[in-house]
Image (cartoon, rainbow, N blue to C red; front, side, top):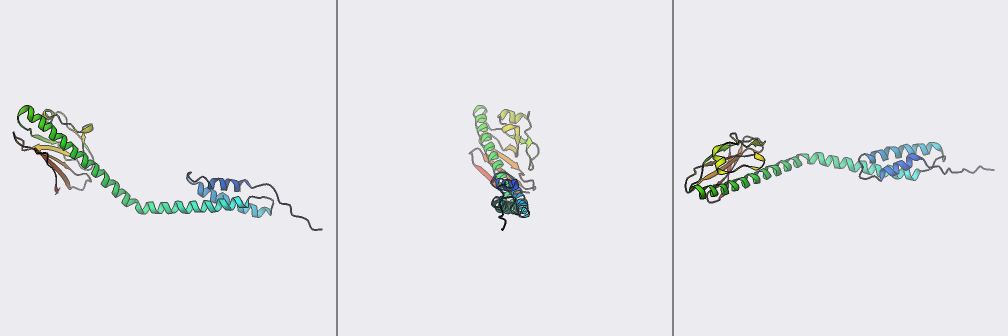
Length: 206
């Protein structure tokens, strides 16, 4: 009389763990862990000759884990290839933001000059501040400079990515200049504003 093969009701823990790990989509490295534990479970189940169940869970864990590993590698490759463009876009955005801040500072200088002229009947010249033109990194605003103190202008946080200067000031006109080298390449970007509040960007100067 042939012996009936009785299937075990015991499920391999690794198969359950593999399937559970495969479902943790937002936890890093669980896809790889699901793939490894799933393969281990399949080998164990095959070796047990029906003593251990859980083949379906293990296969599902292996498939989902493999898909997640492949997707992760694909995303990594895309990020590596896109990294230079991302860095360039970030640098361009940073430079643009600092240029906008410089223009806002020039408009503040214009307002300060108008207030000064209303009180004193003339505009006022101010030396370059900071004394050196910033290159890539911001410099501290130099306090205690008499002309700037009289004008009443101080940049936000007392730091500047541009050097500010006011020239050709008299009773009727002035020119305020902002000079900076935001990317440190030795080429200055220059903005000016005058008594008519005309804000212009000059060609880069070496």
